[in-house]
Structure formats: structure tokens, C-alpha cells
Length: 243
Ligand SMILES: Nc1ncnc2c1ncn2[C@@H]1O[C@H](COP(=O)(O)OP(=O)(O)OP(=O)(O)O)[C@@H](O)[C@H]1O
Ligand SMILES: [Mg+2]
Image 1: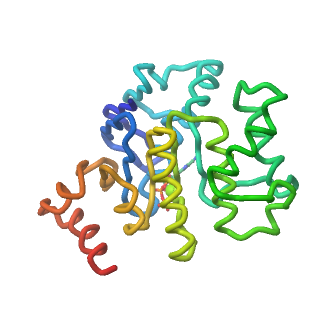
Image 2: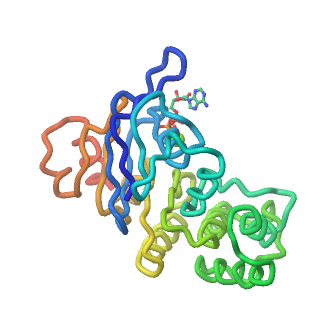
Image 3: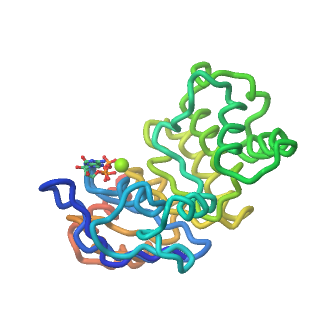
């Protein structure tokens, strides 16, 4: 379980987080919706200790992240898979090498198990015979899948997805949605998904958290969103109806 309590974070005069509270329950997919530049990506980075809040508490499975030392943070990150926007693959390495590198750096897998692990992860995302390809020669949707494979290879308990379907056509995006749902059921991962894609949000999410002016103004199920009278919340529900 991940719990954020009363998080404040500013960059200079910019008060990005102003009392953020959030609970992510084990095995759920929680979708974060909110305006561009609001502070969603920073929030994900704070959960794995890449950025520090100015005040407040973040616990992962009961352990306080904000006071962790380097070694403890390294251990914490073993629990997480992170799909960055744009997949963030190294262009000078093949698809296979990208996944191998992540396993060598961020897991405790033995060298002799690594290539099997790469195969397993690529199979999970339904990519075949791509290990030797360079990222520049594959499509955007495939890159996302490779990014996903790289994260899954590490057997995370938690997955953090930052805009997993942004910039993809509807069909490719649906493929990614399907994969995220499969990972949840086959691996039992707990996920936080930041997205602007309302259709995707409702396909994959169990609960939704609406981020507005530095805090979550509502966290709940789709039904709870539907029954809210808050105009900021209604925007999301109404934009879904238009699809
Ligand atoms: N390392 C940093 N140093 C200074 N300012 C930063 C840093 N990281 C983020 N910010 C600022 O914090 C604010 C929130 O950024 P963040 O990337 O979290 O927004 P976001 O909600 O993810 O937006 P988007 O939906 O466009 O991805 C932005 O104004 C951004 O410029
Ligand atoms: Mg962002």
C-alpha cells in the first residue's frame, strides 16, 4: 500500500503540491487525472524518491520514503516498474540490450537468468523476434511495449505509468490498455496511471483521483465521479460521454 499524507512541494515561487493526500490499495489500478503542468509527474517521482517533498509523508508498505538513504531507496525501487512518457529507451542499444541493462542495474537476477527473463518479458507484451532491433527501427506503439517489457522484467509489485497511451492511435492505445489490465490480473501488480486519455482511464481504472490546484479534490470509483456535482469533476465524466 502507498500512502501520501499532506504533501507540500514548491519549485521557487511555484506551489505545485499543497496538501496532497492519497491512498493506493494493493492490487488496484488508480488513475490520476489532472491539468497539464499540475504536478502529476513530480508526484510519481516523489513516490520512488527521485524528488523530495518539502513536507509531508510518503509510505510504501509502511516504510517512510522521504527520509530514506541512498541504499534504502535502491531497495525500495526494486519494488517499482516505471513506464516513462516516450518509453525512454537507449537508442544506441538493441531492444534486448535495453531490457538486459535494466535487469543488471535494477534487479538481483543472476547473469545466467537474464536472457530468459528478457524473453519472458517480451512474451508478456506480445513482442516476438525483436531483441536484435534498434529502437529507431520500431514504431511508437512497439517502443511503449518494450518500455513496458523492461519494467515488467523486474517483477515489480508496483507499476507507475506516466501517460502510457499518449501519442498513440486508438488501436495501439487499446492494445496497451489491454496489456495493463492483463498485467494486473496475471501478475497482481498495483498500478498508478497518470493519463490525459479519458477512454483509457475508464478501461483500466478501479479508482480515480482528480488533481486540481495542488491537491486531490476527489478520489473514488467511476460511480462516485458520476455522482459528484463538482464542475471540475464533471468535466472528466462529460468528456468521456463525448467519446
Ligand atoms: N525538477 C524541477 N525543477 C523545477 N520545476 C519543476 C521540476 N519538475 C517539475 N517542475 C515544475 O513543476 C510543475 C509540475 O510539473 P509536472 O511535470 O509534475 O506536471 P504534470 O502534471 O505531470 O504535467 P503534464 O500533464 O503536462 O505532464 C511544472 O510547472 C514544472 O515546470
Ligand atoms: Mg507529466
